Length: 130
Image (cartoon, rainbow, N blue to C red):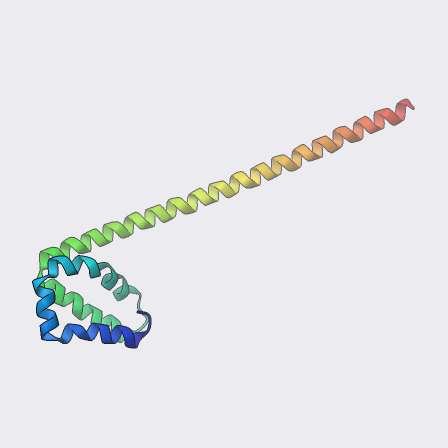
């Protein structure tokens, strides 16, 4: 949560031995569910206390199951790279579309100017015949 008190209270659950034992018993299920959010918030949250608490939680996870933690870290980073690549491709596509739109608009303006010039020359020809 961006609200630090809500995040702080949620992270304090990790100080409860009973909750921690339940999480440890089910870390194969729980860790993949919450890892991405914890990792992202550890990099982005504005409150240093929350970031510190999240680092403690991540450290606890690493101690519980280092192999799973490493797999999830690698998977998260790979997914982030995919997202960044996809975002870059999306921006490039929009840029190409904008360039095409501008080119089409320029061609349309040129066609309109040519049509006006043709019409003007036809009007001049008609008036010179009269």
